[in-house]
Amino acid sequence: MSQSKSHTTLQVAAPEVLGPVTTEEARLLERVDLARLPRHVAVIMDGNGRWAQRRHLPRVAGHRAGTKTARSTIETCARLKIEALTLYAFSVENWRRPKAEIDFLMQLLREYLRKEMPLLQKNNIQMRFLGRIHELPMAVQNDVRDAMEKTARNKGMVLCVALNYGGRAEIVDAVNSILGEQNGHGPRPPITEESLARHMYTGSLSDPDLLIRTSGEMRLSNFLLWQIAYAEIFVTETLWPDFNRARLLEAFVEFQKRERRYGGIREDEPVAEEHARVAGQ
Ligand code: FPP
Image (tube, rainbow, N blue to C red; front, side, top):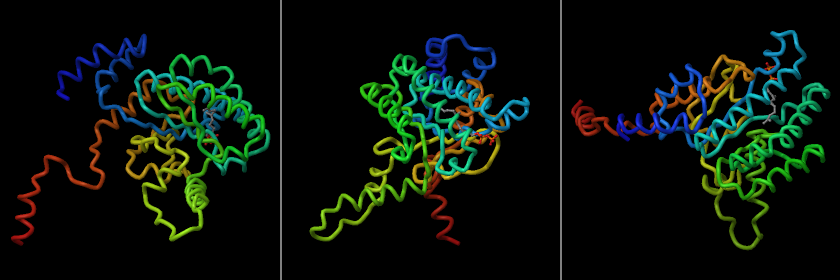
């Protein structure tokens, strides 16, 4: 797409899609090509505890504030017509936290699903959950199933909430699911990248092309290990409760600056001359 055309798209689409924007957001929107946004954004929402600590509040206040950020991120991505957004809400490792904090997080999620259903429906969002859902408290399982059923026919953005999720556990579950499908007759077909991908919790969803992690840690924390093979990684010092719409737009600006080569070379790279030079050495 030419520079002038993408600029025109922006001028016309941005205010219409996002509603009123701040001066900072408007400045960032000028630098984002809305036609080249990532298809699937994955987020490690980190820093709720530190955000609360800095304000001398209990950790759970950070989680509550983090829910508001989740809400604005979900709505912004849906309005920008991003195909999928995956949020890391609770990992298989998070069971090591104090029981009171775990209970609070589960309640917060249930509350979110109840309160935000109209917003999800209005934005045509389809909800999915990634993880060992069957190990969650029964009340959470029921709400999760209910949210999936209520939004199953929505055709807009797919919102995946990773819940009791572990990247290694997901690979193990995918392999077991393939083995479980074998009927025992004849030789077992080989496992391929395609078959394994199909058995991941994400199924046919495209792989994330942008992974955002807030609060500055340079770790993957067992998140989407299979799917992020080629994702651009954006780490920001901003703590999750402070990750507002401007910070999200900043991540998109950075994503668009990066060159995505998937292990190949740039399209305009002078391959022939390079080969001739190396051969002549
Ligand atoms: C990490 O911060 C955050 C979590 C483990 C929970 C994330 C959950 C939410 C934002 C709320 C619900 C989500 C949805 C999708 C509605 P941390 O506690 O590890 O922070 P710290 O590293 O500063 O201690």
